Length: 166
Image (cartoon, rainbow, N blue to C red; front, side):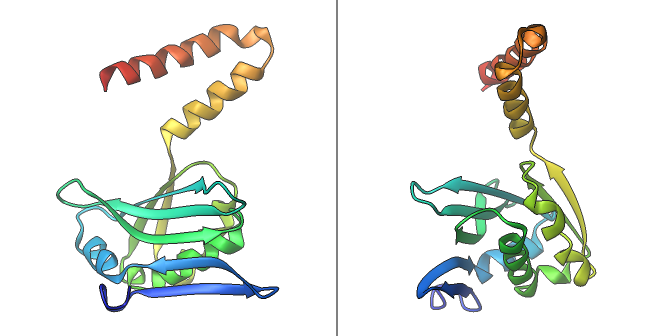
C-alpha cells in the first residue's frame, strides 16, 4: 500500500495473539478529499460473513466517483473503534480542514466517537442517512401492532416511489 500511495498507513491491534481492528488510510485519497469541493464523508459498516465488520469511509469526487479513504476491519461498531479510526483519519491530513460533514446511519457509537474531531479543532456536522432512517422506521412499524398499519403503508409507498424513480 505504501508503494502505491506513499504516506498511507496501516494500523492494527493485537489481542490474545490475534490481530484485530485493522485500519488502512489511503493517503492519495485523503489528498484528493482535501482538494474536494465539499468536505463530506460517508461512513458505513457491513458484515463480512464472519464476526468482523468492514467499515468504509469514502467521499464522492468532482467526477462523481466514489473514493474510499479508509477501511477498517473490526469486531464490532464501538465508539472506541470509531475513535481510533477518526483519530488516524484526522492525523492523515483531515485535521487541516475547519469543518467536516459526516454522513452515517444512526448507530449510537458515532455520538461519542465524533468528539475526537473537537481535539483537532475541526467542527463536525453529523447527518443521518435518510435511507437508513426509512428502513429502520419501516422495520419497526412492520413488527409493531396493527394500530400503525396506515403509517407503515405510507412509508412503504414512499420507498416504492423512490425505487420506481431509479
